[in-house]
Amino acid sequence: MKGGGERPVPFRGGGFEARRSRLLPPAALAGLVLVWHVAVAGGLANPLFLPSPVSVAAALWELAQSGALAVHLAASVGRVVTGWAIGTALGLAVGLAIGIVSAARAVGMPLVSALFPIPKIAILPLFILWFGIGEPSKVATIAAGVFFPTVIAAVGGVDQVPRSLIRMGQSFGMPVAAIVWRIVVPGALPIVLSGFRITVAIAVILVVAAEMIGADEGLGAFVLMAGNLMRTDQLLAGVVVLSALGLAGAGLISFAERLLLRWR
Amino acid sequence: MELLLEGVSHAYGDLPVLEGIDLTVRDGEILCLIGPSGSGKSTLLAIMGGLLRPSGGRVATRGAPPDGCLNPLTYVFQDFALLPWRTVAGNVALALEHHRLPRGERRSRVGNALAAMGLGEFAGAFPRQLSGGMRQRVGIARALVVRPAVLLLDEPLSALDAQTRDLLTEEFLTLWRRERTTAVLVTHNLAEALRLGDRVAVLSRRPGRLREILTVDVPRDERSRPERAGRLAEMSAHLWSLLRTEAQAADRELADRR
Image (tube, rainbow over all chains, first blue to last red; front, side):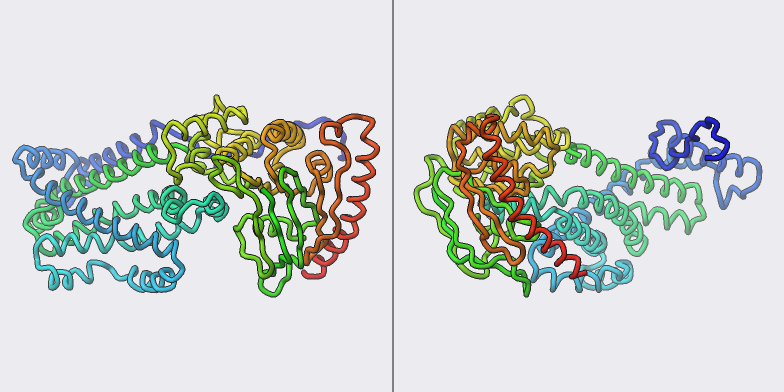
């Protein structure tokens, strides 16, 4: 090099590294609430259209006191849990079959690709005709919404189980059922669990939509009713509860991941 | 137990990889399979253990497996093929779980296999926590736990560094002397073949044919002695001359294909 003098090598790595922060996530949420409060208190937003966080909290407290929250929450949670469980069970069974059996893949994948993009709300009226206006049609909507992403996650999970592990199982004379249960299923689990994150959110979205179409109880029905009565504080209180419901679901999945994927 | 191959040939689609292999693996010997890359060594090993159906010919065993043998033809894999979600003990136990065994026997088999490979204190560790050498020790322990009649080793040391390879070679020999299990070892390392093998079978380039079977006429225990180095070097030079022409031709063939 010309000049020939010593020059320190400048550091240019760094950046892009994932660093964990304990403080930032709650601070971001608190910041959002603060901006919201200041906007309403400062007269930037009409409290009728955007009630302040304080009045939303008050509405939430009132709902909790009166017992209405418990009724609506219980109805929604019941539907989410039932619908999600049915959709997940069927989705896993079909997804494993498609992942393992070539014939099932040839039949199943085109069907899944054709049916997955249909918005499940669009066929809710059909479900109402089939199953009646009561619980089964709502549960069926959620199950249908959960089913397809679960199938796709399960197929993807099975596909990424290394072939060498399956060969190893065969080389020890393991029966097919043992290979599926001890090698394929645990190998597919990481992708299946990340699929659960998506399906839990889908279940919450669909329960609200289904309850808005025909229900007396449930958070969706409550939010719709509050909107019709211009009770925006109650409406947002319902939305906060829905968000909390989704967060709780995600928390459960994280817990399951920590428990089941300890080996990673 | 002996392993007999008669007229084994194999093709992947139109591409013939093995042709007319006649070979007998004798009871209690270590047979090393060497050949240039693409000579079908691993394909042949997969055929020997029934993991691959040959396009032609047949494979048979002769003789009774040892007492308590649960899986006569047992593989050790180059990439270890360990289940990452199972502990060391769990990976070894996997080979037993589909057999009806009394709980006590299962435990003692796993314990003995782990102890034989010096894995006792790692029983609860996960594969990702282990070095490559330790992972292959788990792979070997899993093979030992079923008391195999024939061990089929598919480049078991190729993924390891040189020092670990030497260590594991010696460990394997110590273990092997106890049971004298029939073994077929696929390798591309001449020194390894001449250290371990009773015989070394050389495959030609694609389609793989048996070029020569060399009997290593130095007793295994004397192979590390300096006065035997000359004879071993001669054999190594001979094998290398066989391999080199094949390897060069194979290399050029691949270059032409692109």
